[in-house]
Length: 413
Image 1: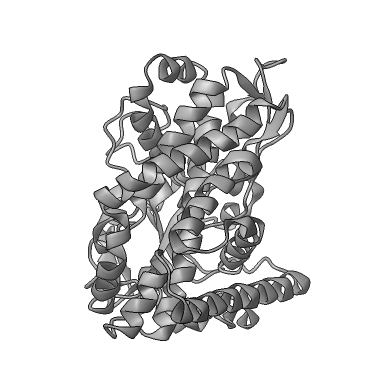
Image 2 (image 1 turned 90 degrees about the vertical axis):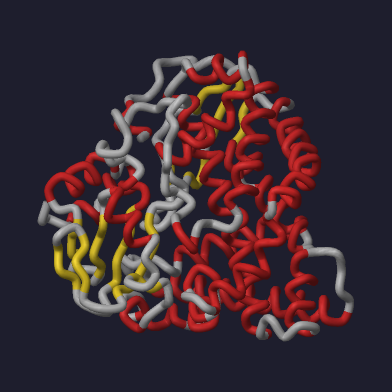
């Protein structure tokens, strides 16, 4: 596949999986000159890149920044240079060790009751309605409230958190399809986000609490383990990563239930299948589409020579559909024992994966048990136009069985 125009077409966002299949078969390592990125699509190559930080750096480089409008660089130097996801060892090792304590199995187990209470409250509101937006009423608020409470910030501001998070991710797009007004809005939103957390951190310095943000501030003040800028970038990263992935997981999982009507009764009859369902959702419609790496030196990937300093778009969403690793990859199978790459691999494996899995499991336990039947409102799905994440803007549903035949798979995949 040498024609790269389809990568920027509406079909790529609506249903990228046939495009991924052609890439894996014909051009598994594809240079896309429009954005200056090499796309890597096969499982073995993706896994190799993610587990080889000595060859493929996570650090942001000038090459990546050149791919975007220069106005969008404001604030990104800070977020890119000291973020846990965009640094290499030894700094990565140091920062990861500090934040790992919040996501140990024991720490996650302590959160289960609170996540359950929140999910029940949100589903309580859903069952009172004849129609609802799954994203607005469950998928967005649940993870935002959980990570807000964990960090110690006001969950009542979740609408702002969601907007800030969406804008930050929108501003990281590599395709450059943003007009002047949108760029100005994104930059202003980014300033608000950074200013909010700077004020929160200053408050925690004066009045520390029993929360993760206070722990990060204490690590800065008492142990000199974090710089002030690292505290800020860690807080912002956790706020974004703590809600976007799980929001997409819940939305994509609901689409899986709607497209595979045999699954819902099986989950209702045996809720112990829900963790397996969650894992298959993560593989089938990965919340994270692409990770970015930079080559440290000239290197061969999939038999293709790539120069030092090249930017790689590592397509985990495609890798999760590689038939050499997953039999009948387009088949949704909750019994599948899948080693998906949706949370990454190697030293950058998502630190919040246990929390995301917990929230996803509980959200579907409550939804499956308490909303016996639900169906989509008519109309196409509204996918967020992002190369990095796969999630829905909205998902209008109505309680009860479908009133008409479901949409064809091509319109919903």
